[in-house]
Image (cartoon, rainbow, N blue to C red; front, side, top):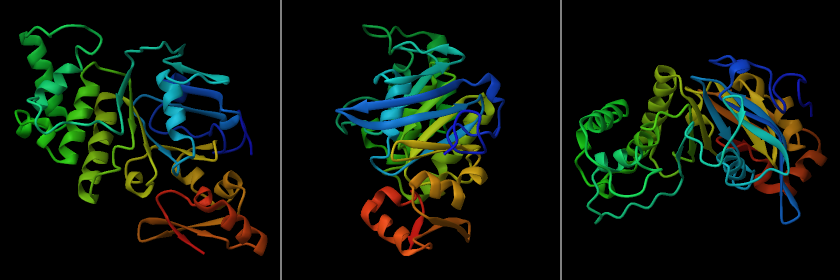
Length: 299
């Protein structure tokens, strides 16, 4: 597997997506992480530029969550570094907006959608926020940005999954970050709600020039919007445009087992075990680790 300035998509990738990576908002440089004696991430490098929509794709246990924790400053890397806007990141960095995967919202809590959005302004302060005309105008601006005005005064715990995601995105955006991280935001949404959230994030990235990095195990849902992809398997990564990364040679090298990549009716299919018998037995031993996320596996 090539790395650094090597060929094509593997390791740090060579393609420019929607933005100029020489002015990247996020740069992950040779990050490796070991936990309890086990290597979780190995020499992961990629960059995300302003206005780019980047998918962080990998199956459960591939290392996505650990990588997000490193970017957020919640987990130290044993090797490598993370730069935000060209500088080493600080623990609480206002350049990052974050939407967590699990956010429990009590249906009985008397918290309106607009109230939750407004809390994003005051996240770094203690005490009760003071009302102001500028603050109200900013909340209204964010509600409009995510098309949440129609349910702004409803209890957030009673909203649908897709509506809650819109509110959480507005909450993360209201502090005007340059990088928006989302951890599996489509995990509990139906197909239509997921498509709407992806379209919303793509529009926000383009209009507000925010770098969006969204983790998912379902790749196909992001295909219409992705400028770039960071594909993780077994702690190793390949990055670049979708055309550069989602290829038989790149994914076979990444997984260490032969796979073929097919496009059928707009969906990506990965045909596993199309090589010799040794490839088939390797796939059987590794189980889900060699399954390409977001695709159907045909053997």
